[in-house]
Image 1 (tube, rainbow, N blue to C red):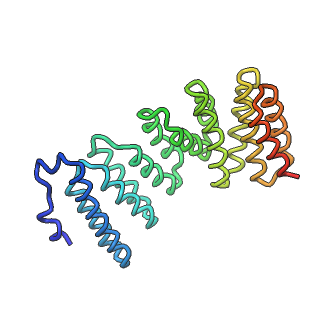
Image 2 (image 1 turned 180 degrees about the vertical axis):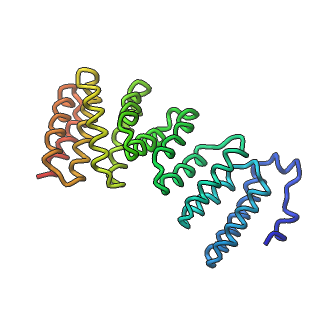
Image 3 (image 1 turned 90 degrees about the horizontal axis):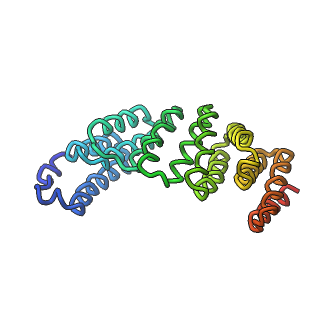
Length: 253
């Protein structure tokens, strides 16, 4: 297997070519996937490690190996792979951090996974997916104070991002069936901001709570919050949002 690549090392000029680098890495990945498809998992892993050895300064091979190990439910090995990359690769992109967080999530280490997204947000403050994932992970870890603070502070950074994340957090909590954690999170946020602080944001939180109560098959809890959201939207002339809240109410009956 190694012999295939003995003469495949790029010279100095080629190393400066992104296209050449991508082509070389793809050959490793394709060969590894061929081994995996044939059921030779260890050969596939060995090939990913060969790619890391050949290109130790690139985060791509670490991501490929880490993701593959996650698929094999070998979470400790995946986490170790990403931790090694943190020490050897100078710059890691957001995809690297997402994969690293996925490994920690799969292992059940939600708080550590949330901390990984701190690095992504520091580099990409407008990445609402990273904000969403961090808040969800903190809530799942029981860190409601920190999760609610992060959710509240988004409005200070960007109202648009705050709206997107409110909705995305509620949806993600429902996907993970973390209804109780999601309800506690948004109720904490609602208690802290109050309608006088940010009426429209309060409406968005009420709507998120209504959505979670519906997904939790508790329509009684949903009705109160959706009616509150609808009233605020109507007061501020937000017709589309008010109609959306009304549609959710109608879906309950």
